[in-house]
Length: 244
Image (cartoon, rainbow, N blue to C red; front, side, top):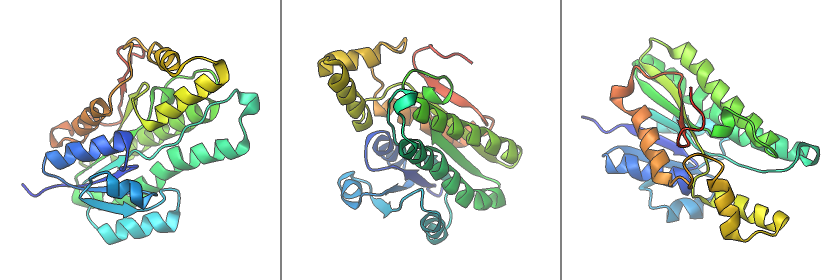
C-alpha cells in the first residue's frame, strides 16, 4: 500500500509529537506542523513545516504546496484559566483563534481534495472541556466546544463520501501545557507541584494523568482505514467520567 500522507498541527511537542511518532512507526509519511522551527527540529519528525494555523493565507499556501493529505490531525491548541470575571477579551480571542479557527482553516483547506478522492480522515484533538464545563475555564471550554461543534458539522457534510471527521476528548495529559496548569495552581493556591498535579489527576475517574501515547492511540484508531463507519464522534478518554 502507498504510505498515507498525514499532517499533524502542533506536531512538535506533547500529544502532537506522540501522534507524529505513532503514524511514522506505521509507515506513513508524516508532516509535523508548528510555529516554532526549533521545537519542530528537535521533535524528531522527518518532515516539518512552519505555519501558524490561525494565518489564513499561510494555511492555504501550505496545503496547496503539499498537495494530497490523507489524514489531518488538528492538534494545535492553547489554554488559559481564570474566573470568568478575570478572563480578558485577549485571552478569549487567542483561545478561539488557535483551538477553533485553526481547526476550521486546516479542515477547510484539506476537505475538497479528500471529497474528490472519496477518502480521508480528519481527527481533532479536543478535550473533555469540549463536552462539559468546569470552573475557571470559560474561554478554553467554549473554544473546545466550538472545535467539537465544527467536527460534528463537518461530519454531517461528508457523510457517505468516504471522508470522516471525529474528535478525541482527553482529560489532563502529561504535557507541557498541563505543566503550565500545574504551575498556575501552585502559584495561586500555595500547593506544591505534586499536590497540584494530584488535584488535576483526581478530577477524572482515571485517577492519573493520561500519557500522550494514549491519546495518539485513539487518534490512530479514528484515522484507520477500517474506521470508515465512525463519523461525527467524540471519543472521551477520562476513565468513564463522561459517558455518551
